[in-house]
Image (cartoon, rainbow, N blue to C red):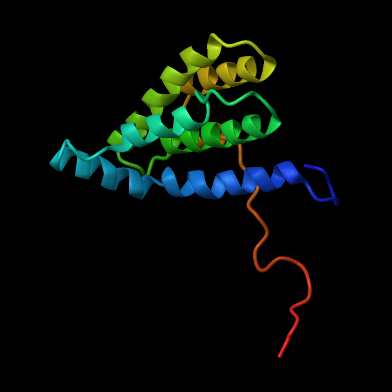
Length: 152
């Protein structure tokens, strides 16, 4: 987002995206749904999403730009999961239900970022389509830039 200079919030976004991508993977979600169906004592996808939202959107941490970036990543990943036509209906429904609940909760909060998020969620819930899900830039591939020194 900052052009040629290092973007520290871009690093936050990339890190959150890697973690959220693994947690909200459609195949992982399906395994959680099936495991919970076979044994209700095992946490299911809805529980995982609930814990994820409790640690991000519903956290008691002070509002700040880092929190906004992480919340945005979680929102986009939930939207992508709900819109993913390759995911099972149960997985999509869990994400859709979480977004619906989140929209009501976010609407009650103050601040432009919450107002914007509530409007985006409402629009998505009315027309859930993958092309309406914003993309998150992927981190660059490979090792960090710099010399590899041989100290031997």
